[in-house]
Image (cartoon, rainbow, N blue to C red; front, side):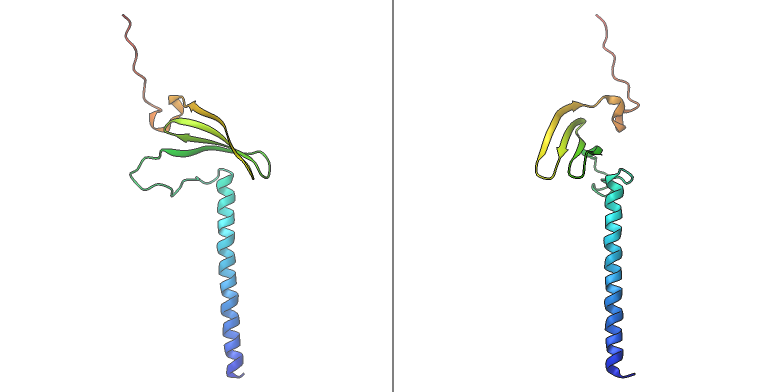
Length: 117
């Protein structure tokens, strides 16, 4: 074997390895996105810094068809229903008050009783 064929073989192996690694990265991203969209992975897994409370969260996502989906978003214990589509995003309902039993931090808190006069 000559020196030129060894160099070509080395470059070919490097290129093939690079293509395989990039393909694996793309596949891992696609799988992660699909699992997060189906609700099997938490959407905001790394979205906030430790020690900071989350004010914004996606409560639920329902795929209506290929281009449209309904998203229920919670911000400061108030929920908003959004219709996300290919061309237009609409706010369907806003100001949905969350019952205290469904808020994760207040599940065990009993509301204060009003005293009778």
